[in-house]
Length: 216
Image (tube, rainbow, N blue to C red; front, side):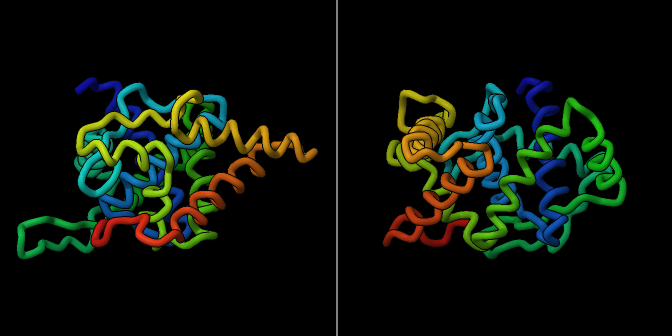
């Protein structure tokens, strides 16, 4: 795996855990993947694109191996703390991640850097809306995301490209939302577009049988 990709994900993981901590919410490995996926999905609103190597369909939803490699690297460097470590009868290990004291210092330095502050802004915008809808619904919101919703029927290992505007994707949905707001005489600011996007995810997720059982 390209080390530059892992480095970018170390930035994203720090942003995700740092912002989640502002709501007193540690993230386990599956929820961390989902949170970063939502960050990637809406990045186009911020006039940027996610890393070229990103998420794929997997058994617990979108999965990017670079995210797990990044959190492991941060833990090795003492920037991430692993708490509530548990092991199921099947041997699966579950742990919650949070930033250590050194990690929070690193996070604060990121907020002061032009190169990384924008990614923290993305994380904060996502966290604000997830918090509004409920952190327990993070799984449902991700399973309602149109790129993943379409791709998951094809099985595991399918690349998830959320920003393509000519295909079923978040990028396409954001275009539709922006045009719909404009035709109604509403200035489609970033906040309004993001609110409408998450309202769509929320409403779609509430439809019966949209989210597989037993997957965080």
